[in-house]
Image (cartoon, rainbow, N blue to C red; front, side, top):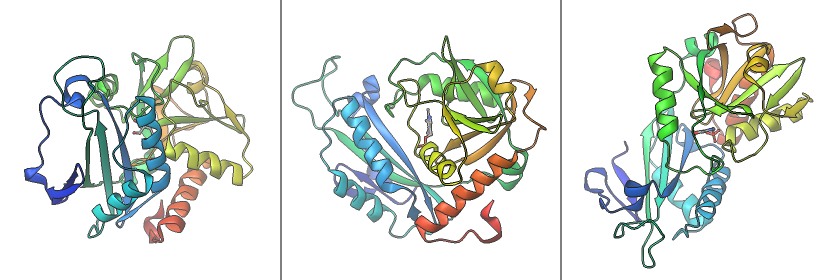
Length: 292
Ligand SMILES: Cc1ncc(COP(=O)(O)O)c(C=O)c1O
């Protein structure tokens, strides 16, 4: 973690930042968050992440004490001396500390925190090999479009993936299909068409997903916004996941079924490279030989 963190309007030393045990984020998961990936200290798609944070806050009827411009300013301030190759900015806002009762308390100040962590980035060997995934039942509700701190199903799903030696768990929802990963959106290529789920209460509107859809459009790739069944997914020629920290990452195995020829496919590689070009352009950085 960086040396100083943001807590309710102030930058203070990390070891002096405390939140009340009565905080509704701690008591009820009554809060929202955002993760922004940064390259050499430059935040990628910052405005889009802040916009989604504001949308998540509105989704739980939480009035944030700071507006769009102030939030952008604080994130930039947080990144002032950050030179790491990769870093992530974490922002969390909860309804604040109050006597424990389920309904919204009448007089409560939201808690807003931000901090920056050094990021790892996906190792080149993993990018080249792709990852294995498992499929788990989607035990979440229908607020998955809100980036809320209620992540227990996601935590348990990712832990199951780790224990199975896989890189991600994919949620399968009864009657709908495989909707997204524990912390990623999912795409497939079938008969030359790029598919991903539509915006819905079952998936997070990923900032990376949006970049990939923009890239697909600019490259003239046909796109279908639809959920795929498990059978459709495992018989796709290519599958990949997207997220802020993983970018565009090939999936080469789903629940023991090899995808395509078991290597990242051409559409995946083209979009992964296109994404890095976008990062270079928008963040004003150069990856050099390390681009993909
Ligand atoms: C459940 C879920 N879906 C999708 C994503 C991908 O979103 P983004 O591309 O904005 O990181 C995340 C990111 O953490 C996530 O937690």
